[in-house]
Image 1 (cartoon, rainbow, N blue to C red):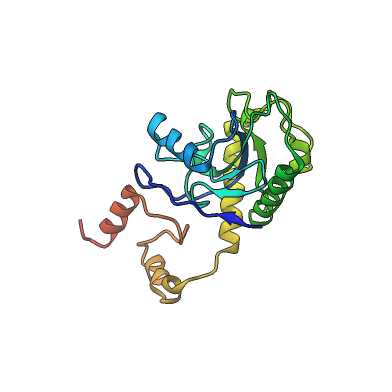
Image 2 (tube, rainbow, N blue to C red; image 1 turned 45 degrees about the vertical axis):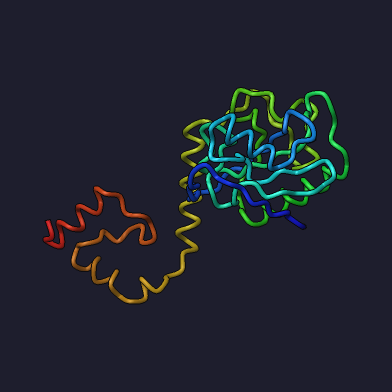
Length: 218
């Protein structure tokens, strides 16, 4: 699979995504736009950082990189921090997808599913109030899954469960790195400076304050 790399002029720095639990499928709702044209529209008309999708698949089967895959997108309100977005050229409210584009989409989706075990594939309209990716979008063909109901919306409880599962899988697969090998983390736990959980997690300001207090630096 060949992904065409594009160079974009971002309006502001992108933010890394810490979780990937969803793959959201979109359509262009137009015809003939290039990845750069979408980027310019999202940046200069919508006021976003730039192209909101991580991938853009043209009708000829060419796959273009949008945002870097590990960065937060801007394609699905409320779910950008945990999702990858793929956009297909065309308006599938009033047209059908050709086999060449279907083949490219299937290959990309299969690759993402392989690299993110347990990720859930959704249409944009399954998560937000929109017609995207259109009534003629070949969801079943691209994913091999049953077509979800139009009113199927992921709840906050379901989202929290997905996040808990992902974090548990990540922690179970975690391998100690140099910071753990040095033995300092074990000493910090023994002295009560660290609580012994979430060794790889970022430290929040309130948590840092507790650490500094335990070190008698406050």
